[in-house]
Amino acid sequence: MNSTSGIILAISLIIIMFGMGLSLTLSDFKRVVSYPKAMIIGLICQMLLLPIIGYFIAISLSLSPTTAIGIMLLAACPGGPTSNMLTYLAKGDLALSVSLTAVSSIISILTIPFIVQFALEEFSNESMAITVDAITMIKQLLVIVIIPVGIGMLIKSKFEAFANKMEKPVKIASAIIFILVIIGVTISVKDVFMSYLSEAGLPAILLNVSTMTIGFLMAVLFKLTRPQAISISIETGIQNGTLAITLATIALNNAEYSIVPAIYGLLMFITATVIIFIRKPLGIKDELSLEKDPAN
Image (cartoon, rainbow, N blue to C red; front, side, top):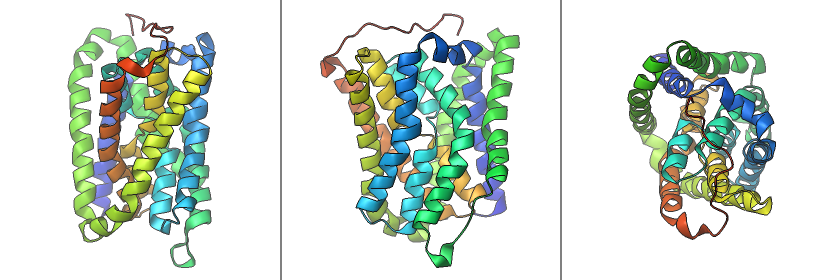
């Protein structure tokens, strides 16, 4: 992708993250203290287990450097706004989902550069050696993630009626932008996309299914409610693919690293749909322990 495409991609992500900010309040961050058990389990699954699973998938399948780095880049990213929508449709704990998305997005500003640097050192061959400027990447993440979310939250706190009115249109726009990003990536690397599809398809679906399953089982193991288990499962398995694609294009300057996130972005909706339709027979407690404050 050229510089113009990179700018368009960055603007697209900024719009998506701004939309997420319109749905957040400070209460979503306070739940870390108010309801620590579910939050801690969710964050462990998302911030720790997800990259570990991505790494073992990469080495177990002996993936090419480009695909392996793409998997790790994706695994380093937090959940995205899409996970909140899917949690709602699956009758999960929406408050927990929103809180996990918000907190993991903040934490990932610090973790992404180091996970990506590890992946580059572990999987790059000599001809494609590249290093990550952690400070520069953190600055980029601040601009395309934290600042738009912060502006959205500020508008929410100062002009709540306007924010509530805009929340749905912005979410729809975000979904359309996400689809256009996937299409754009596919077109930009069309010459190599099909060759990577055969290799990247399996690890992408394995990452999605295994992380969603482990997230759910961890919640069951620690006796969380069914809505909480659904939320943690979706938050662990539905990553911010747009962020991964943007970082591949802008920070790493290699559009081929974005192929795995693009494929993953399509496959994750299939598994999420399965969860939505099988939620009834999951067989654990159904009551909610986190209630979404009406003001949120």
